[in-house]
Image 1 (cartoon, helix red, strand yellow):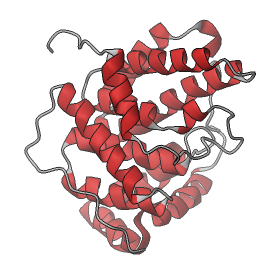
Image 2 (spheres, one colour; image 1 turned 180 degrees about the horizontal axis):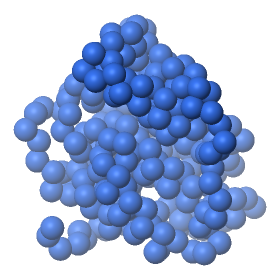
Image 3 (cartoon, helix red, strand yellow; image 1 turned 180 degrees about the vertical axis):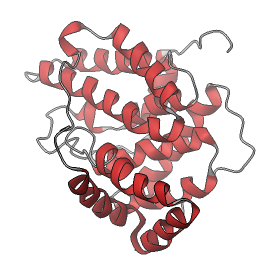
Length: 253
């Protein structure tokens, strides 16, 4: 790998500006008072750096948003800082199923080394005692919400290609990994998948999840911003595509 990237505040602010103003959404079920965390640019950027095999970009994104939070100085600063750290960690964990867990591990390690002790996680967020049957039910529901009318054909394709893949995708992928939405919402999870897929140069899956983000509630402009931001980070990181990155199509249900 070439030397570490020089990631300036100007570059990161440019990424942040790509996301439409006034379109922020709740960041988790309990919400957050900070508008800074409602712009998901930092989730997309961190995952795009990780999937591009540039783990050094992840703590740089984290530190940049942390500075923004501290400059704003709200009463909920401590909880917002904790939520920021949790959301980036969870997005990286989710992205590992697409980009490969060696990349996710390297990015989580780089983030951990830059993380203040009070913002580090000490306990699991997913319940290891939940049965696989329950995770499968959760996964099936999420799978259908992501793929819509294509869910049956996509599941049939996975099952026919390799039955174990079909089971794994529904139960482990969409149940255990993606189905946990207490930290990163279903919409933010869709953004995570798009960012990782774009860096991985997989156009069929990119197209599926650009649609999936719209099914999860994103506007056309928001999904276009996620696509553009992911491309900018991947390009900056040295990714070269053999295939054209699919455009965002107008979603019709």
